[in-house]
Picture 1 (spheres, rainbow, N blue to C red):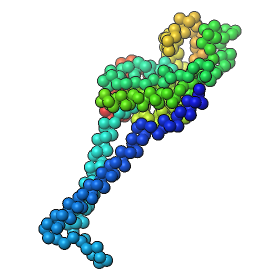
Picture 2 (cartoon, rainbow, N blue to C red; picture 1 turned 180 degrees about the horizontal axis):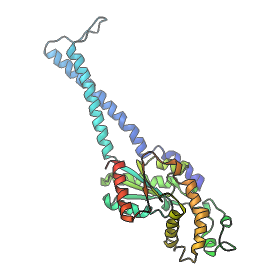
Picture 3 (cartoon, rainbow, N blue to C red; picture 1 turned 60 degrees about the vertical axis):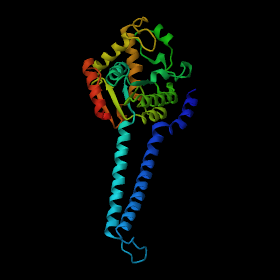
Picture 4 (tube, rainbow, N blue to C red; picture 1 turned 90 degrees about the horizontal axis):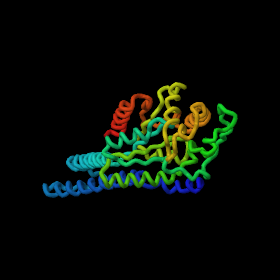
Amino acid sequence: PQAAAQAELAPLWTRGSTRRRAVVPLLLLLLGLLLVVSSRLFLAACLTFVQVAPPSRGAGAVLPLPFLTGTVAALAGAGLLALLVWRRLQGRRVKVLGIVGCSAAGKSTICKSLQKKLDNCLMVCTDDRYLPLDSCPRFDLSGIRWPGVSVPEAFKKRGDADLNHPDSVHWAQVQNDLHDAIRTARFRGDRVVILEGLMVCADHAGARSLASMCDAFLLLAPGDSSPAAQEVLWRRKYLRSHLGNKSYKDRGVTEQEYHAYWAWYVWPRWLEHGVMDRRPKRSEVVNCLAEPESVAEACYAAAASLLKL
């Protein structure tokens, strides 16, 4: 299934906004040329009306000054009009905001807050497009240094599917979802679509293709990523339910067991497949460990600045 998903990506790369961005400048260029030709014809008619002979095409012919001035003015006007139209189209284009952060950084909470501030805009989440568990990469549960002798029972039931690896995501389907959301947003008159995901900025072909559709990113980072900062994150993850599952606490996992799981699996996977040294150009880092209200306000201010809302 993963190979099939990757094969589907090739035709998707040429769809949607990328194709439109290539066609629109061409149309504007043709419009500008049409204006130039029209202006020259109009000017020639005016010259004829005032009984100024049209310029000769002989070897030593010199174009009248009004004709040259009119041509330059027509070219400048056409270029200015094309620029104004292009900027207007850019302003109306639906923009995609990527929300990326490590596990328990509060991505879903921030997205819901931004949706309210952005007129209930649409959101696409990569968590909705995991491959079937038997098609995901595996990781070694026994390689984690558990506080007990063996792998805790709750983690045996969870299984060894590596959902923190980019090969576990059906990237082609996420791209389909994003294209559909952009089309719907354009019909509704929305300005923004939100894309939320753990590994959108991963060094992976599918993730790179998806990230190329984003206009800007908000990167939720746990302060200095120190052990104390990480503790806030793993305790959040330990106590909350996720993807339709009970919290690890409710599944009988102890704090020591989950801390080992975080330290030996969850956090190393983020260091490997998160943003880290691959920070996108148009992005803003927001400390996800601040007070929830201040995080939400900082995210909205950063989004408005990056997307020029």
